[in-house]
Length: 236
Image (cartoon, rainbow, N blue to C red):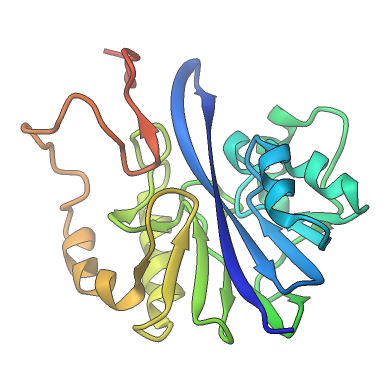
């Protein structure tokens, strides 16, 4: 069977440093009519498994250990006794959601996962989280970037960049080495291509991401998928 990519969108609330954020997440399913790998099983296991259907789940891969990336990982994986994979540097984040269990696989740079007739190559892309990874599928012309890179640029966490220098290094040194027509399938928002985003890289490096926008809207989706809903996102 020919492999394909499917998307499931879920919604929920995550707590970041004591502040609640409403978040929309993309869960990606890669596989064929018989078997799949689930990427970023976020919070709604029933909705994800409904999309999976009768197909066997081989693995649940988490691009980060953040709550909105791992919230449904155990339940989705347990149905078919699948393995859960996470970069070891994100295990402390994982522990904030799952206190009594650990992932089955410690992912490393250049690791490989196979499903149907394609493979997913692990690329370390830290920044938003220390163990953030992306998964490149050359055969399907797509890269699953988690929070590292999204349709509107580098992703944030709670409206901020935890380690922007590391994130930009990951983007420039890893993601922007991929072909320009590669689909960027992030944890939040719509898809875009590497070629669409790469021309903006010099502006990001020069500081455009951290300049204060005095005309920013007071509500609506943020670049990390969160929406302001009467909730203060900062300490002020």
